[in-house]
Length: 179
Picture 1 (cartoon, rainbow, N blue to C red):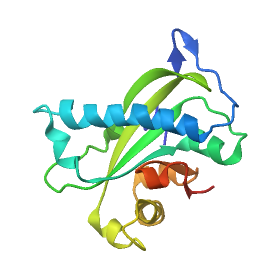
Picture 2 (tube, rainbow, N blue to C red):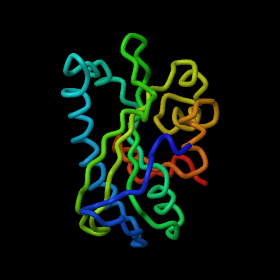
Picture 3 (cartoon, rainbow, N blue to C red):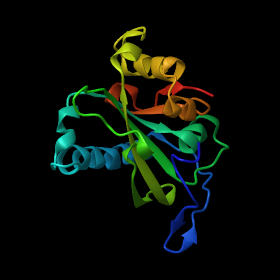
């Protein structure tokens, strides 16, 4: 499991400090704005040729807060060392999103409430057969189907902790997967 996010985190030469401040909807909106910047970068600047992943522009299912920060949003006691934001897309059969490190891209940002934090942005394409097993076409139902039926290293990695919606707007702050 350590293959996804490896090694100790460092910011300006110091190991990141775990924050126990309550995450609010305003904090989630701040994270969402950074996520939208990353989505734009991913669609327009990444790949060879540049913009290779633009085919995913209309295939976005959801952007979610996952792992420790999501768990902290749910239980208020886990603490936040860093922030993991996942982009879930409907898979394009012609342009695959590589599984290796899930196209991780990291940035350091200063948040109003929780201070300096590293954000890891990761991407995952969900196969159509998993989407077909969903109760509905709602993002939260597709993600539940993926976490329950995905049978991938990523779904197994994400399932032990909560998942909280960031985008689209109707899932902002919604606990999609509670652990």
